[in-house]
Structures are given as C-alpha cells and as structure tokens.
Image (cartoon, rainbow, N blue to C red; front, side, top):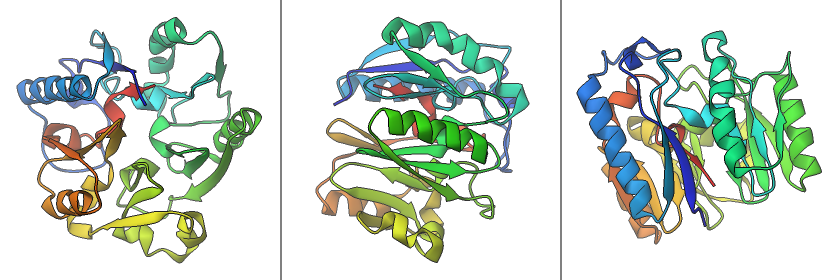
Length: 260
C-alpha cells in the first residue's frame, strides 16, 4: 500500500524538454489541467501528496520518477542518462531526504533513469536503454541485492518504439505484468516473464502499457478501451486519465510521481 507521493508541477517551458516522438507541441493549459487531474487521482487512491513548484532550469523535471528509486528501506538517487537532466537529482534530493533517513546514489560513469526500473514485488527489472547503462544497472543491482531484492536486466536498446523499459511493461500486482506486444513476443524476454501472468497490449494500444497500480486502482491512459476492458475482466479496477500532452514528450503515468 502506498500512502505518499512526490510530484512536481510542469513548468512554463515544459515543451522545451526532450522527446523522441513527433506528436506535436504540448499545450501548457492542457498540460497543467492533466497534471491536476493526475494529482486528484492519486488523492482518490488515498495518497498524501508533496507537490513541488516548477523547476524552470529543467523542462523535464515534472517526470520525477527518473530522479529516484524509492524502496521501503532506502531511497536510491539516480544519475539520468541525458546530460540536461542531471541537475534534477540535486533539486529533488532535499524532498526525498525529508522522508528517508538513508539515501544511496548512482555514481559516474553509471547512468540510471527511474523510468527503466520496474519493481515486481521482491524483484526489479532493470532496463538497459539509451538512458540507463550497464554500469548504472550494476550499481543499482548491487544496492538492491544488499537490501534483499533480486534484480535482472532487460536490454531494450534495439527497440526503437520505447524510450524507457516502463514504457513497455508495468507490474500491477497479483503476479501480473502488463506488457506491450513487441516485448511479449521477443524470445529473449520470455524467461524473465515466465513466473508472471501477462496482459498483452496490442501494438495499437502500446502507449497504454505504461500503467500504474496505486493501492486498489490501476491508473491507465485514456483512449485504450481494449486494455481497460481486459483489466476489468481480470478483476482490476482501472482509473482512466487523459495523458495526451505528456505523451507528446515521451511521458507516461508512472513518470509523474514517486510513490511510496
């Protein structure tokens, strides 16, 4: 059960952030409205929110998930793989330290984006991507092992359709993974997913694979009815949110909060 979350309001220069997709320029008024609805959804799920002011030095800083990995025992501060985002970690560190007496950090030359880390109960999938390198994954796995968790790596560098691992896979509890079709059909990943029940997301709805279990709800993006219906059929309780403006900047539901 989560009880708290950390978020950061998007800045007026949100559209100046990094993106690999060509879906148009986000409209700031809609960005802010969608972020406010996301905050309301977390409150509806029972979370107490710490909402940080915009950080105009870092246009991508509303994607707070990339800056830290929060476990029950310790916070692990990351080292983002994009140079323009390195300062986001120092900016959020004081807030994280308000809740955690112990913090660890990824050191150079390691890089880790939180969006590449998928926690599934006592196991962590670590994506090797254009943002998270093998040295960063090694450091993170060592930290997690010392805390009693297991970890394995999934190399997604050959997949041009996603930026981060969690763009294509989400753990929603009850031994269930939501996995985009391209990843579910990749033979190199089969052994990683063998112990889980899979909900496969078709290529037409692949953006929706980034969903978030928050207590008794599963947050999913609006506009993907097949996944919504599949979740309901399997006994989950989806909460649908419009994410159109964040999708334009490679952002998903998990990116917008640190939940603990």
